[in-house]
Length: 281
Length: 316
Image 1: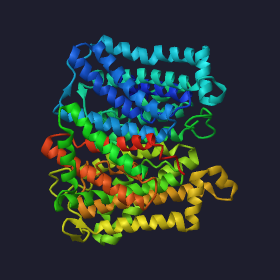
Image 2 (image 1 turned 90 degrees about the horizontal axis):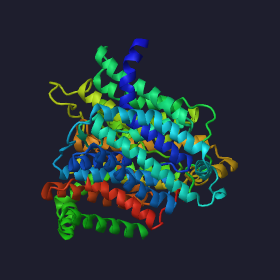
Image 3 (image 1 turned 135 degrees about the vertical axis):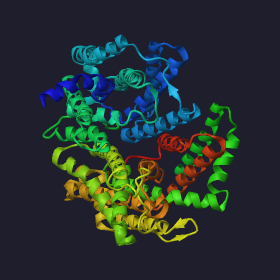
Image 4 (image 1 turned 30 degrees about the vertical axis):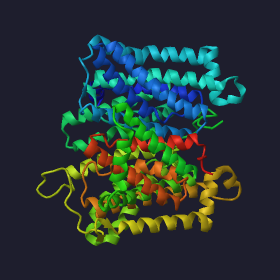
């Protein structure tokens, strides 16, 4: 069993890098009091804009920048409704997901169903993103959220926005940080993990990320442990597939979602969410 | 009234988006309208699409009224249809009853996780959608695959709903369901408890309502309606199952319910509107080569415009 897990670990780390970026982004935004259910649509849009930008410029860096821009665009719409107009966040998030699904599908069809990346991302660049997601971002977030005045106020906006001057500004900042991370995650997904964009290619990663944020109890360490745990469990599907133990392929495809459901059930007991999370005030 | 304005605004926005692709908005609007209500054939298509939308819309309306975030219509729709095809050899009524039961059970997994482990249903229901999609994939490639095993689909169901032209009897069931849902919500004590729970769970608790029990019931009824939608779509339209059977009806139910301001009777009009949009979008794809994803885009625009108009407040 240990063998199997060790075998799955490297795959797990690489394959769940976009997921980790999403988890980190959602962690920041939820700490500021906003539930962004539109994270799925944000990532899907980023995956597409990243490939389009890379196609246009033949540069991987520009591809990642394109992903971030796409995510920022979606974040702006989400923020306009959820922060500015104080609309219900779950409803807004759902609308954002439909919007992204419709728009990307629209463009995908217009492009004749062929949106391939211009060239594969070099291994060095791939590992740079992996290290960024698993080491640099967690340290940066831990420092930013818990060691700076900005971080304190951001978290206070998530606990008691009335006690913070300009709480909405901190929420907008949190949303921008989330878009940055998710834009990179989406770009990594379409440029490094696949060879282009496919319809609905995020396949629920955004919702899995939301679940892991809760499982990790809104802490950076919990986010990493949760993602790693999920990553290994999900990578086991490839190992099981290779071992050919007779579990049907289509049922193995359901493994990540069932694992996430189990992860969500692992939060038993008292979980303390940020006090103002999801409230419309 | 604001809802009607929102729907019109969304359609106008949608046609204006044609400019981005260098097409004429008028031409686009024209295809949308003639493709959805311009002929007998188009109207029948619109009605056919409205039936599952009405039921999934009711499913969402009931759940949201009770303050339960059931985003799992898609999964409940699929599981309902899977069980319906298995039970179809026992007749139409048994098949549809089994579909309702299956939808209710699938939704209740989320309720159980919420009550026992405090897992938020907004996420568990979505995750159960993905699980159901792969379950369907396994069924049509494995145990339920057609004899001959040529394509990933099931055999034709043993029974079908009675039809008049292209329109099947499911439309009567769906309309009856919305009247029943209205009666339940506004004319019974149970409905009052459900709405009270959704309006303010803490106050409902103080008033002596068992909030957990309301959650269980709302989710089960909501799941049953989505399951019924799946069963009716199977026995009335597709007659067999295949991988992309659900086609987003579960998610579309959210837009349907929101446009109807979560009112069961208004849901009928809302479902016909979105049914027309989907049918018109199909025509756009055929004649103007514009992706039918326009319909999904339209749903999003409607929800956002409704928020802008401030006509929809959470659970009031």
